[in-house]
Image (cartoon, rainbow, N blue to C red; front, side, top):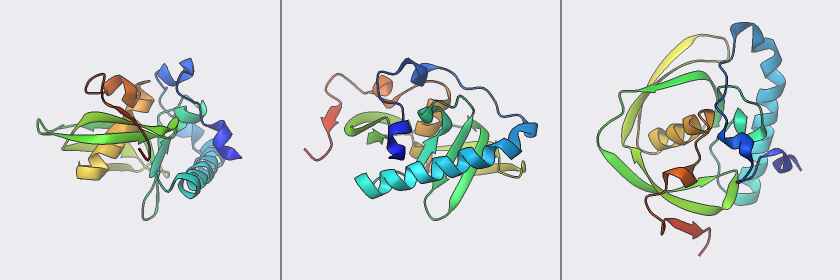
Length: 161
């Protein structure tokens, strides 16, 4: 079961800041990207949720996000900027605590700059669901969990209740 590789809430490694990926590391990333894909697909199959995973969630402390909504996208060394002042409130979930939902505020929109899998620079304008998703994954790269962004001490709920 690949899901056993996902670090669980309480693991101190989840609070470490990840290091940038160097261009010369690209060849070694193929195996990691394949593993992140397989873990995400297994999570989707089990929980009917999951759109992205960050490398630190499996203990690989590199600034890499694997996104799979309509197609796979590899996001390397992302930078979030131009975050809107308008916020949205959502129930956030995470592969690291799959049965727990956390109510958080996220920016309604933002921009992200990153390298793709072939080291081409990309820039996206994000809003709504995609903006909140990438903010969540970006937090993982900085050692921040949704539990730390909870709106208040009543912002926790078990999935399905």
